Image 1 (cartoon, helix red, strand yellow):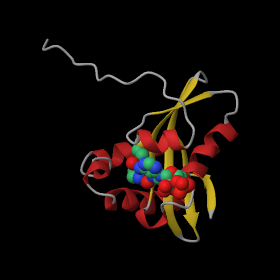
Image 2 (cartoon, rainbow, N blue to C red):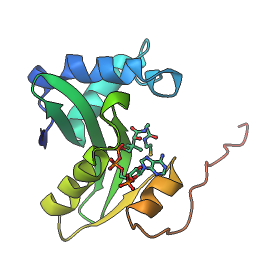
Image 3 (cartoon, helix red, strand yellow):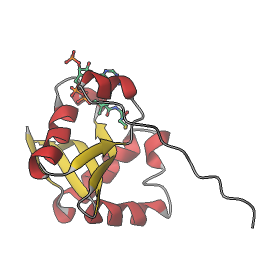
Image 4 (tube, helix red, strand yellow):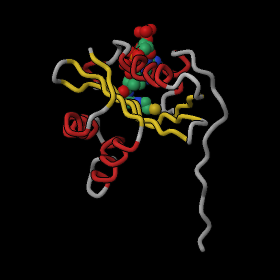
Length: 132
Ligand SMILES: CC(C)(COP(=O)(O)OP(=O)(O)OC[C@H]1O[C@@H](n2cnc3c(N)ncnc32)[C@H](O)[C@@H]1OP(=O)(O)O)[C@@H](O)C(=O)NCCC(=O)NCCS
């Protein structure tokens, strides 16, 4: 298993397919107009991929807030590759490459991050915009 930085030419097609195959919660990134936007986001973000030979089986995308904090936005492992610590290894890449930056993850699976030993810090709110 190789974990490395995302490379557009090598990985884009496989990664977008993996995300689409994950189903409706994830295909919002790859359907219609979002496709181009998400491809650009993958390049602009700190993105790592996990590869088993030619098979791209996981990825992690994070954004760097000017060196103050890193926010992990997306973490996904292909269903048939789950339970092999690939998710954990993808997360490790971030804090190995950015040892001086605090890393936060935007969690949809609290139990998983608790299992990895991460500490809960606050919560997230969606800002509701008034009708102007
Ligand atoms: C969450 C996810 C990334 C975990 O990836 P993974 O490579 O299977 O995880 P790991 O192998 O590193 O798991 C390590 C441990 O966490 C446990 N674990 C995995 N997913 C879990 C979950 N959803 N809830 C609780 N524990 C979980 C594993 O059982 C394993 O425990 P063990 O060592 O006692 O067997 C993967 O299940 C996934 O892609 N899920 C769908 C997308 C998703 O929910 N992403 C997170 C959005 S923020």
